[in-house]
Length: 125
Image 1 (cartoon, rainbow, N blue to C red):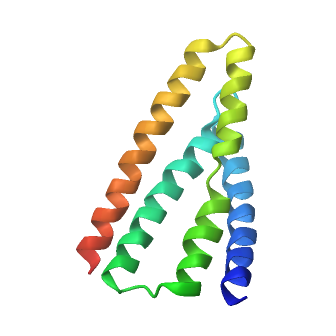
Image 2: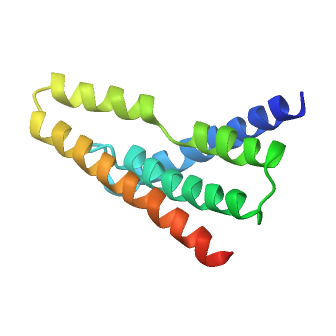
C-alpha cells in the first residue's frame, strides 16, 4: 500500500511539473514545434538515469522512495503519449519533415540524457 501511495503522489507531482514546464516552453518558443514535450522528455530521461544510478549505488533508497521518484514522478512527468499524438498530428497536417525531426531528436536526445544521468549518478557515488 505504501508503494501505491508513493506512485500516486509522485504521479501527481510529475503531472503538475510537466504541465508547468510544457506551458512555459510553449510561451517562450511557440507551438509550431512541440518544444515543451521535448524538454520534459529530455529532462525526465536525465532525471530517471540519475535516480537509477543512485538507487543502484545505494545512495538513494529503493522501495517507496524509488517508486515515488522513478515510477510516479518521472513516469508522469515524461510524455510519450503526448509525443506520439503531437508527432502524428504534425504528420497528418502535412509537416512530415518536422514530424520526422521530432522523432529523431526525441529518441536521440532522450537516450543521451538517460546516459548522462547514469554517468552523473556514478560520479556522485
